[in-house]
Amino acid sequence: MRVAVTTPYFDFFPELKAELEAAHPGAKFRTDRRKLEEDDLIEYLQGYDAALIGLDRFTDRLCSALPELKIVSLCSAGVDHIDPAILKKHGKKMWWAAGINKVSVSELAVCYMVFTLRRLHFFSQMLRDGAWKGPVGFGADLRGQTVGIHGCGFIGKEVVKLLQPYGVNIIVCDRVDVSEFCKPYGIEQVSEDEMLARSDVLTIHLSLNATTRGLYTGAMMDKMKPGAVLINCARGGMVDEHALKERLESGHISGAAFDVFAVEPANGNPLLDVPNFFGSPHIGATTRASWGAMLASGIRGLTDAYDPQPGVYPFD
Image 1 (cartoon, rainbow, N blue to C red):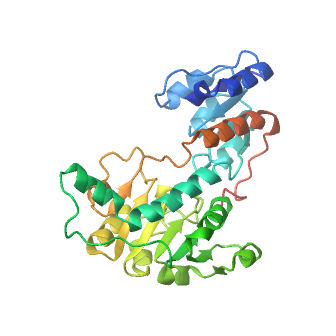
Image 2 (image 1 turned 120 degrees about the vertical axis):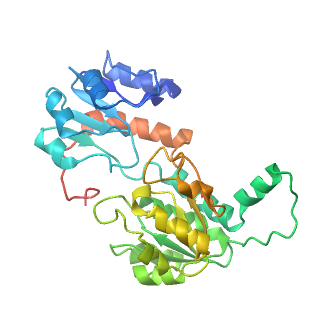
Image 3 (image 1 turned 180 degrees about the vertical axis):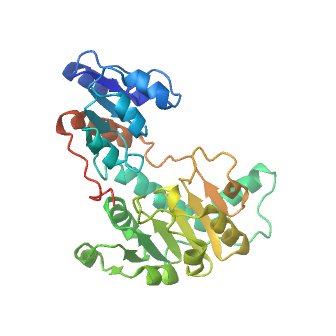
């Protein structure tokens, strides 16, 4: 099998690179970090049987131009950049494994809960500006808060586990029944409206798909408990960022911390100018453990790839 690797991160994991080369001699690796546009990707993958990828998009034109390519193996935690119908049309198998970055993303989400409630970004900037405390108001403890978890899949469940020592009241909202998971933790599964109305801290852990894209409209955010905090370490396309900015400025949402944005890179995003908003550049999975797991999963996908099924999780 002729394998071409589009993600540049194997340089950080020489043991995994050696494993891939041993299994597939002559595998091609990238040495630069620039994004491959469609024409670049076609040229790079020409003549190869399998692609081991990160967040590259496989369009109809690209798939038509690469008839020899039969396997697309994802080294990513999300799959919203892949259209399964296009891959299926062109007879290309794929691989993706859910939940491989659940520890790093869940830890970041809990970190951002504390970070936002304590207004740490505000106080850090104040220090940089040469100020020292003063009458600037208070933060809040996480302990005693009601935390709403929207999406109780791999990452949402991990957030539940991490929150156990914090003394919080946890409610979860998911479209499937997760009551058996909830029972040992003494937590409630509630409706979306109840989650919005009761949550002091609301953290999003949904997949981005047709049912969740643009879900958090202004009208939906108006249903949130006044003064609540919103955390998003999932995908940016689920939240109307203009509407969020208005509600942060009005104080209806007291603070927000996002690792993801509708358009990335998010440099120049107006949310970054709002004092009670904190943003980071999609770092949820940027731990050595997570990236090692994702690359190893991608290698596995070269032999375990399957036919993509439109409408079947996570493509729904």
